[in-house]
Length: 286
Ligand code: E4P
Image: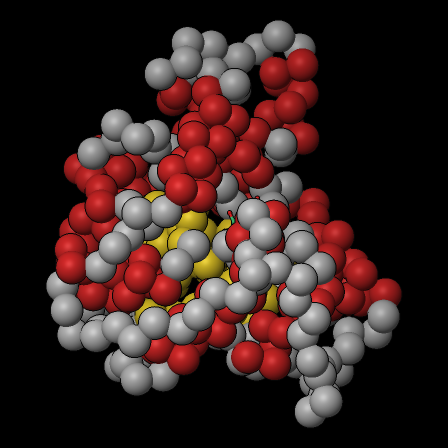
């Protein structure tokens, strides 16, 4: 098989899925997790079903066990671990969690949301040599802010545009990926595009065609790709978008992150959902 240039990450919270994907593809470059996926991990679900809700500390310990099992299964794209946050969580609180999570495994990337506090936490993190993956990205402006906030990082930072959730809102989510790639082609290469919220084989094939550096893919889409013998897009490949096009914006990557318009309703909703799924596993919701 010709391995795609795009690194393939498993989007999930169950190490068994990572193993299965590795068996099917022969490799897995990395993994992304998030609070909703961790709440769906079979062991966590069993605990909750048996009436055992977790303390905040227990939740962190379970999360650590999960990523420690996944860590040796994947390649150099690492394992992304997401901080627990809501609209009130400060940059310092996110960073404190991020620091602890970063110590769990040697190949960690810490996920912070594309919000002002998340960008501040990323800025502190990269100065301390902590690798970051900026999540819940829905716009080119947010990606430009990630670029500015992580300038000077020793290792590449990831930005994760969420394709499927933009599609769900009636827009062409892949346009954001395409626009960010175009914008970064004029940059210094310190931010890599990790296409996320992938819902279909067409999304994945278009990521290959656009040569996104990474894509995180649910195991059922990887299974579908494998069942079709791992097709790659040829030069005639055309992505069939159904949503409203998202136009390219001319942005100056030399500006500070504060100068970009980072507000996005889907980022706010995404944080609310992650926080709700996290709280549902807790005995005494924070
Ligand atoms: C990965 O980093 C994201 O958390 C994930 O792709 C979100 O996918 P969803 O929109 O299907 O929840």
